[in-house]
Image 1: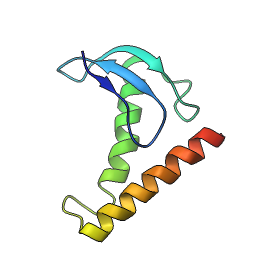
Image 2 (image 1 turned 90 degrees about the vertical axis):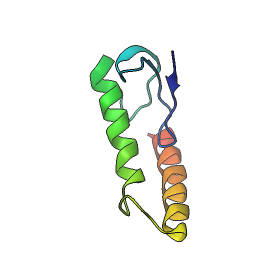
Image 3 (image 1 turned 180 degrees about the vertical axis):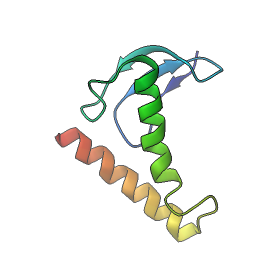
Length: 80
């Protein structure tokens, strides 16, 4: 089964082909308190908010900004 490791936080979640939670391997401080499918949905939503910040077809410059924003978010969560 695939393991989801988003580039916006430190969580690691195993899921199936239907994107259904199987098990939690790591929960970051931002998402602690959430469990199972609710946790997976929160992580996906958090990551999606960065990916779609500039719409579905961001420019090259916007894509680079998203990458920097994701790196900053991951560092921010480490400090929580």
